[in-house]
Image 1 (cartoon, rainbow, N blue to C red):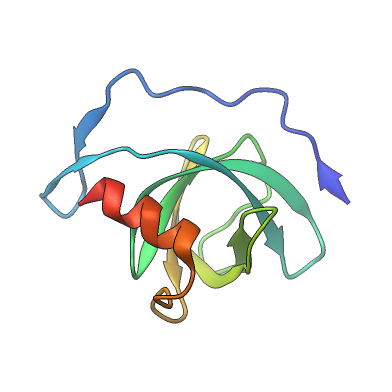
Image 2 (cartoon, helix red, strand yellow):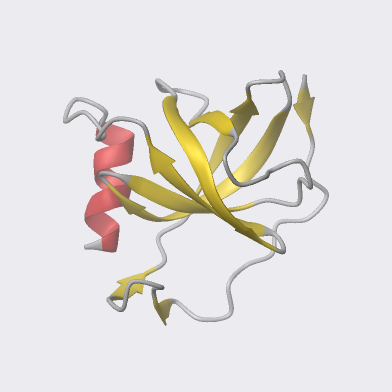
Length: 113
């Protein structure tokens, strides 16, 4: 079941300083996140790297330590763990680096570098 998100807040700035100290461009694309409990939600994916990404989502069910899958309607989802949650944002660490053959992810990562 896909939960329709009533609002997706757009960032007010296109560049910000990431928690790890490097300046990053927020590249965004709509995606879909699925929890291990069968919950689904639409998200905005940004700050992507080969090892993780940040998301923006109105779903209140994300908690640090939860396992999820995240992807696009037209692609293979990646397995991840939720590392942090702040209001309508969360940070995910992928369980494995993004494979080179996943073009949509590679494009998003390239926009952030």
